[in-house]
Amino acid sequence: MIFLTKPKENVYFVDGWVSMMQPRLPECLSGVRSVFFVGIGGISMSSLAMLCHRAGLRVAGSDRAKSHLTEKLVSAGIPVYEGHDASHPDGFDAVVYTGAVSSDNPELVSAAQRGLPIIYRAALLGDFMKSYPCRIGVAGMHGKSTTTGMIAHLLASAGKDPTVVSGAVMPEFDGAYAVGGQETFVFEACEYKNSFLDFFPTIAVILNLDLDHTDFFPDMEAIRTSFARYAAIAGESGGVSLVNGDDENALLATQNENRILFGFSEGCRFRAAEEREENGRWTFTACDGERKIGTFSLRVPGKHQIYNALAAIACGELLGLTESELKRGIETFSGVARRLEHRGTFGGADLYLDYAHHPRELEATLKTARAMASGRVLCAFEPHTYSRTAALYPDFCRVLSEADMTVLLDVYAARETDTMGIVPQTMARDIRGGVYAPSYEAAAEMLKRAAKPGDILLILGAGTIDTMMQYFE
Image 1: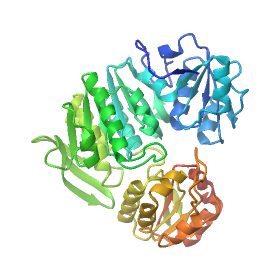
Image 2 (image 1 turned 30 degrees about the horizontal axis):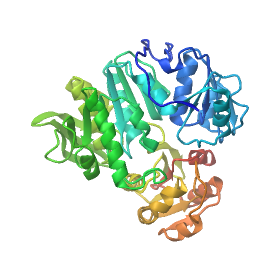
Image 3 (image 1 turned 60 degrees about the vertical axis):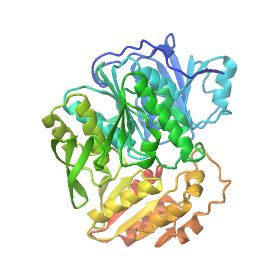
Image 4 (image 1 turned 90 degrees about the vertical axis):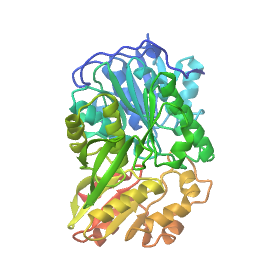
């Protein structure tokens, strides 16, 4: 197979937003007139497909199932096949694939037999960003998409016209990406299968480290090693790593001289102080050393959002934004899709959709919902991957027991098959207040019957559980 693993130099983009201007393609696609995306339904893959489409290439792709993202691609004129078949790449000049796709995928095998260039998603994204002098990459197990969106919003509101590729839809950009000017590229840096090691940040944000992606990372030592390599990439280009100084594993992973810390601890350069909460939303004072930057009131709920905001403020400070620009950008940011996203009311209860699929994320979401609710907190949760569920089973049961009621669905398999004997009915019994539902419709009916005024209903998970919203209409 002709796998392109490292991006090339000298990529050029044009000014303007994606809705107005046409992006230029990176050098790895030089001479290519058509490209096929294997796993096109992923949030990053769909963004890259749209960028290629807007640059004038003929684009198509495939995915295991239809989704709102594939529907959006189809409406833009990009054909999407449901399922994978060896004939799909016929007539295309190159193939792009995602790490969630196995090497025996029939479309990859077919492309290799034809001698087509086969380009890894992360390598293509890395190639896209290389021409930008300022490249802000947001890494960490939790909070990447929100922080990427927050930094993008902050820079856009200050007139900095960033180009952005995120892991979640940003409402103000009407998508998970935007093409801006030639100076600043803001991107989500995913650690799965070491994808972020194909990227080139000049500011490498590291929010946190946690045991996750256990189908790839065997232990925390492997995770720390990968994040150390990610931080080093910024140093190699004369940049900095911006690290959560309250996260022990992030500190252990980043011993580099170009490290700047943010957090609550006294040793952090960018520090939060004087924090206070009202109905789940936080106000805090941000400092740069002994200098007070300003006081910020967040629209996005949850104490964990202070870390995300500090990272964004630190980026803004490093790029020379004024206090008024920082305050306007941070305080007007209202979040990204599927991150405690308010989706209306039912029976007097507020309904929220959230992407949380790791115990630490679930804990933060449930704690925030508890602070916001005048009544109970009821949730439906779809576990994501068998390996994660098995590796963190006790933590899942402990955290989900904090809800007043948890409706547990079958595991969303994603790229896996069940070789670990995960039985959702048993898991539901191990959760205080847990019940099992065999379908999205059944789960919605359980929540609807239980809902009372003042309650908060949470729809939780990283799979297709967002389609459950149709049963609340």
